[in-house]
Length: 167
Image (cartoon, rainbow, N blue to C red; front, side, top):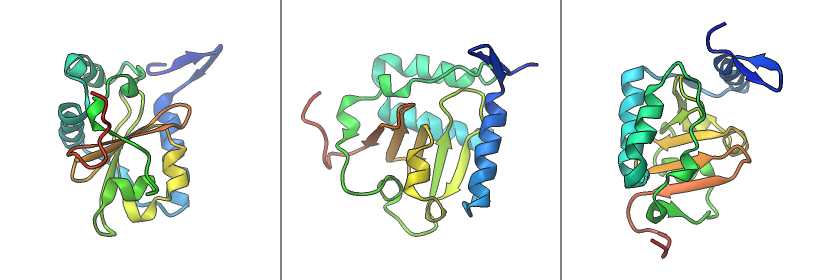
């Protein structure tokens, strides 16, 4: 019974939902696997350091640490405005990778307590990624995309290329 969440009188297990999504993607040929917790923490810590507003870093990090809580992380609320990029012509996957065909992407679910997933970028189609709400971080950690629950994409990058003039 642990880990079950009530939604409109129906109980569901967020981890089971993600396992189902992963199984469907594998059937479509996407190469992915669950990331070890220590590796996932390093990637998430880098995301928080580079892309989360200074005033909210502690709260976002502590929410991530609540592994069994299955709380929703509303990361779009805490992004640093100076890292958000306008949506360019490039696809979500190519925005994150910028490197070779074997580049990796790490995906975090919007709910805490769900294991992070490492994906071989060349096997993931943009339509699948952009319809899967969560946080996607490129392998080099300099780019991230938050796909919101209404499928908006908030693209973030370190550096000055295409930065917003609003701070």
